Length: 376
Image 1: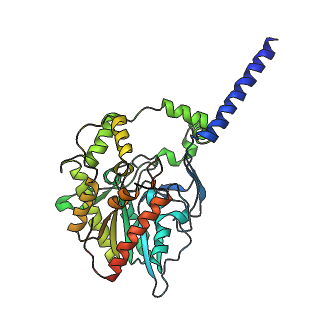
Image 2: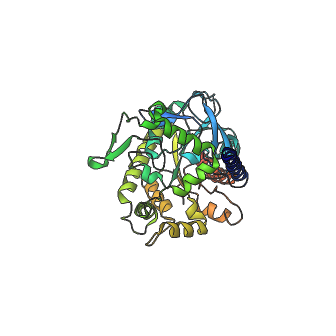
Image 3: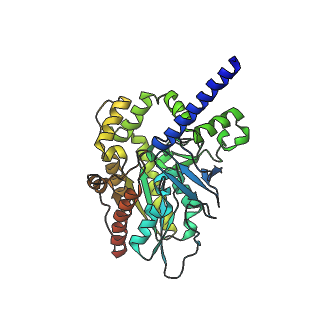
C-alpha cells in the first residue's frame, strides 16, 4: 500500500514538473543554446567551422546558422572578383555575424541591397575584438581583394582588445597585442593555448550532462539562473566607468591600444587595395534611457557618465589616422523613439540591422563620389 502511494506521489511530482516545463516553454522560455559552429583556432583563438550548421536559441529567438566552405556565415563566394565588380567586406563581432537574426536580415545583406552592384561579404565572428578582426583580415580577408572594408566597433571591443581571454564568452584564450617602444604593436599569446572547453571529451560527464540540461530544459535553466552568482559590482563598475566614465583618464590605455590597432588595420586594407571605414555601434544602454537606469540601479554604479564618449573617442582616433568614420548613435537614438531596434540581450533585431545598413550605405555612396572627411 505504501509503495503504491509513493508511486502516485512520484507520478504527480513528475506530472507537475512536466506541466511547469511545458508552461515555461510556452510562456517564458529560459534556455540558451549555441550552434556547434565554432572551433579552437591556434592563431585567432576561435573561428567558424567550415560547412557547419546549427540553431542559435534564446528566449527571444531561434535562428539557423550555416557556415560556408571558407568558414563564413555567408553564401559561397569566390575569392576572385568578377571584372568590374566592387566588393565590400564587413568585420565585427556578434552584431555583424548576425546574432539572433536570419542571414538575409543582417546588416551585410541589407547593405548589399542598398548599394546595388557592390558585393558584400560578412566576416563577423561572435566575441571578436578589433585585434582578432585585424588578424582575420590579414589571414583571410585580404585574399578577397576588397574595395571597401567596414569595421564595426562595439563598446566591449575596448576591453576585448586588451584581454587575453574572450570577454563574456566561454571560448577561452585569444591572441592579444601590447604596445612596445614608440607605440609599436607586439603580438602576444600565439600560438593560442587551447582551453578545456574545446575538448569536450576532456570535460567530466557530469558537466556535460549539466550543460545538456541547461540548454534543453527550461526549468533547469531557470533554476541555474536564480542560483547563479552575480557579477561582482566592482567588476561592473570598472567596465562602465572605463567605457563611459567622464574624464580622459578613464580607459586611456585601452583607447591608445585600440587606436594603434585601427591604424594597423587601415594600413593592411590599403596594402590590399581597399579603403577602411569605421562604424561605431551604439549599445542598448546608450539608446534606451530606461535600460541605462535599470543597469545603474542593478549594478549600483556610481560616478558621472558620458554615454556618447565611445563615439567621440573613436572619432578622434579615426580623424588622427584619416579613416572615414560613422557614429550610429544619433540615427539609432532618433529611430528608437518609434521602433524597438534591439533584442533584450542587447543585440540588434532586424530593424536595427536595417537602420545600420541604410546609414552605412549613405557613407559608402558618398565615398564613391570622392574623399569624405570623418564624420560624427
